[in-house]
Image 1 (cartoon, rainbow, N blue to C red):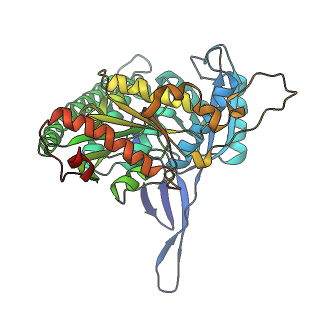
Image 2: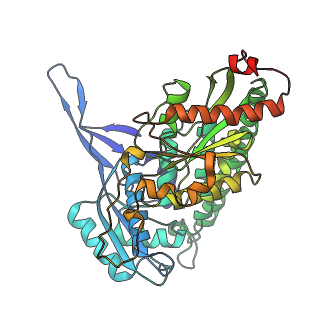
Length: 445
């Protein structure tokens, strides 16, 4: 987030990291937040911070029901709040498929424009990834900053990146996103009519920008290779210890659980993508040391090129001996989130790995009992936690556990389960005694 001071005003853009490049390529006036700067008697500058107002747009199609569309837009609103925007209104439209020109119909676009003009909205965010043509047409009509889910996620990643590896990966994903969107963005510089002196440099400028981005992508990929080599060397020096990785959907409590088990102080917050850089800690349970890593969370509609860019960060997942899949059981559609994570894990590493399902946030689980006279089908919100445990989860036996990391419920049981699973892997890999000390019960046996 950058701050510019001009005259008596400080100018601040929430979405600066991704869109400085796009502002140049599109040659449009970026949408800024203007913040008055006041001076006291001691001439100290003070700045008031305002959230940028945002409008969210989604479509209801044959493959996406109204319930799904609303759930996706609620998640998009959470993403917008994480980025620093304030969602003011949600717009939906029923369509057979998104409009290839403007995503929504002309009438709905006019409705959005009227709301934007009347309420001084600074940014409009669409739930799906927009094509360059859609992006250009919508910006020409609404005259405000237009974002889609991909650019919003990229912006959050850019703000949360702390290490050189994460910053390089985010920048690579940004460049890959911008590359196909260069076409026809310099039409204002092209030849408008015949005649001497009418030939413009538009095509030359496009090729120049394309070459600059391609060169940058090549350089970033080489930098990532060097970083990967350094990280691989670090992993080799970790000794003979079993590696355990915490995986799961974003904002399910992985970092909180990591702090409990490893007694660390990792940043944990009720926001999406609070963890971006992989954190590894040595943990000792009883007489068994092992390595526990906290990885970046997954999300629905995660951009493919972003997954590709972060494969080096997710090396901890690929090289892990045991995966601890953390699930937010209080979420109404936690099963879909679970499936999203499983599909992403298969894309990262197709090999099957031992996994423990940890259903977190049982303290926040709620349900609505179904009336006896109600003949409607039983829905997810009508099932209690005890009834839920008797479904497909019962077939997982000791590979499944219900906890509350916040209230520290069943944490000791989880540690015992981890100990048994890690011990089995450890004994298989190192048949000789390699524990810190022998337990008395084992000596007697």
